[in-house]
Length: 287
Image 1 (cartoon, rainbow, N blue to C red):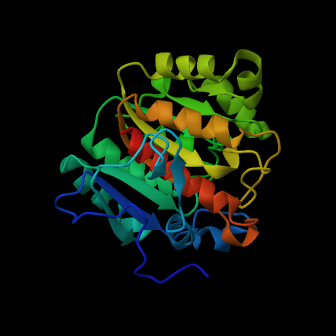
Image 2 (image 1 turned 30 degrees about the vertical axis):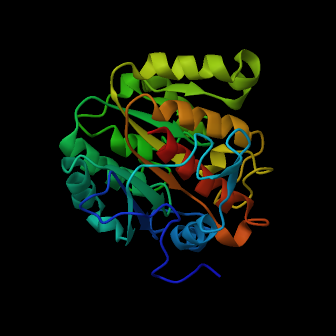
Image 3 (image 1 turned 120 degrees about the vertical axis):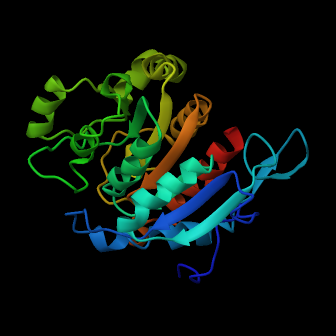
C-alpha cells in the first residue's frame, strides 16, 4: 500500500552532491502519546507513493507542471528514511553543504531533533510553526506536546521572532505557558477576520530578517481537507489558505522545513497525502 522501500519522492532528480534540496523521511512515532501513534511512522513512504501520482495542469502554458509556479528546476535528492537519533548530525551536514533539508515525519517531536542540527549551524532562527495545538506542555520533554519548550532551550532560537499559525486547541497548561512565552499566535479565526494577505504580512513583520525554519503539523488544516492526521481538530485552515501561506513564507528566506503527523490509515481517498505532496512541491517551486 505504501510503496517499496526504494521509492523516491516524485521530484527526486539529482545525486546528493549536486542537489540543492535534500528530502528525507523519519518514520518515527516514539514521541507520540496518541492512540494513532503507530500510523504516523508510515507517513514518509505513504507520501512518497502518492507523490508519484501528482499532476498539475498549467492553463496558461497548456501543459502539466510540477507546481503552481511552473516546472521545478531545483535539484532534489531523496535521501530515504533516517533514524530520529541521527537527525541532528544529518541536518547539520546538509546545512553546512548549503543545501535545504525537507523532512517528512513521523510525529512532531522529530522537529526538536531537526532544530538541534539547525541550531548547531545557524544563528537568529525564526520558527514558523503550523499546528492546531501550541505544543507548549513543559512538564515533560522530548515528546510531541513539548516541542516549543524543548526548542526554547536552544541558544540560536529567537522566540521573539517566531510565530504559531492555526492554533485553536490549547490545553490548560498551554494557555498559562503562552502567557509567559514570547511566541505570537495566529488562529484560523484571525484569518477570517483580517484576511489571508494581512495574516501573511503579520508573519513577515514578525520574522523580520531572521533565518526561517518552517514546521508543519498537518492537523493545522481543517479535517475536511486533511482527515488523515494524528489528532484532528475542526475549524482549521482550508487547503487554499494553507498552500498560500507556505508558498509566501518560503520566500522569506527558508532554510529548512518539516511536515509531520500524517496518519495514512485515517486518510480518506488520499486527500491528506496529496495535500502534503502538493505542499512540498509548492515549497520547492517557490525557493
